[in-house]
Structures are given as structure tokens and as C-alpha cells.
Image 1 (tube, chains in turn green, orange):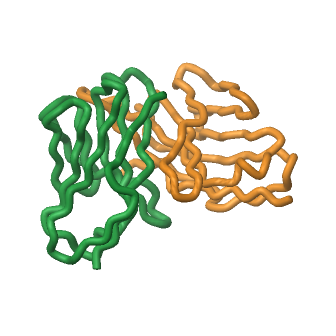
Image 2 (cartoon, each protein chain N blue to C red; image 1 turned 120 degrees about the horizontal axis):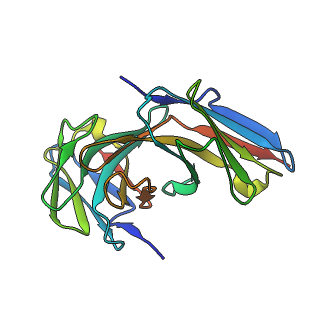
Amino acid sequence: DVKVTQSSRYLVKRTGEKVFLECVQDMDHENMFWYRQDPGLGLRLIYFSYDVKMKEKGDIPEGYSVSREKKERFSLILESASTNQTSMYLCASSRGQNMNTEAFFGQGTRLTVV
Amino acid sequence: GESVGLHLPTLSVQEGDNSIINCAYSNSASDYFIWYKQESGKGPQFIIDIRSNMDKRQGQRVTVLLNKTVKHLSLQIAATQPGDSAVYFCAENIPLSEGQNFVFGPGTRLSVLP
């Protein structure tokens, strides 16, 4: 069974902390994505990666960075957490380049910044 | 910017009735479309997909219709069951030179009444 695993279901962090959200996929997928999900706004793309060490900004990259040192792992980093980054974060992966295959999602990490 | 949207943010149906969830997209270059189901506290799960060279695809109790002329996508659920209660998202795949870009709609909440 294919799987995308996010390291935490729930996180509470203080304003100004550096936060790491980890995502691992076991499907040998080339593409990995980080989205945030907020009520009424749907899923918004933060960053994506189409290969190891490659990254592309999505629609809302400000305040975030990413790391993809290994094919199976894609990390989202909040350099200095702020309260407006309280949200549900979803990691996803997909196969290949324009292969018309779906993205598989993790279970989500609900981050609260206080 | 170009976006994917939904006509109805909420939909209530009687158990056993058919459900129809609609979606409008605006990017004419999109070549692949997906419907996802998201239950409370979980990540989105793939339901069904359709390529742009098709206008209809059927799965088990679900059918997706694609009208490229008016850039419209719909999800039909036959004999709706309580377990179908969830938020449903449409997504379009926009081809890129590297990787993929999925754009999601804001979602429709489906409530199944007993």
C-alpha cells in the first residue's frame, strides 16, 4: 500500500521558533509538494520539488523554505514561526513528469503557533 | 490568476439519492483532472480522474464528466451513503517543463441526511 507519512499530526510552537515539518514517501516518486489548507481558501501550494535538491516556489512561499536531500524525504521549514502560519499542512507526492497521475497525500499536520 | 472553483460550497442530500458536485476551471492548458475526498482529520484521498481527451469516466458509484468547451467538471455519486459525507475537491494538472502543478478548488462539503 502506497504511503506518504508526515512526522507529526499535531504541533504547537511558539512565535519565533524554527519549525521543521517532515514528509516521507515510499513510492519512489519524483515529485513532492507542500500545501497549506485554510478554511475557505482550499489547498495552496507552498513549494514543490521535482527531483532531489530541486525546488520550486509555489503560490505562497514567503516565510517558508524546503529541503530535499533524498528522494523520499521533503522537509518544510518555518524559519521563524508566526501566528499567521497556524494552519493544516499537507504533504503530497506524485510520479514522474506530466505522467497524468494523481498526487498522494499524507494525513496532515495541524500546526498551531502561539 | 487562473484558478479552479466550485459553484456550491455546501450540498445536502438524502441518503440513497444521487449527488452532483460541480467545478469550474479556467486554465485551458490543463490536461488532467482529479476528484479528491477529504474526511475530517484526514488528508485528501483520490476518488477518480479523467484526462482531457475524455469527456466521461466511471468508477464504482462515481462518474466524472468533463466539458472542455465551458471548462466544467462534475462528480456524480450514485446512491449516496452516510460514508460519503466529506469535503470534495477538484484539481487540475497544469503541465510544466519540470514536474507537475496541481491547482485545487476550495472544496464542497457534502452532507448526507438520514
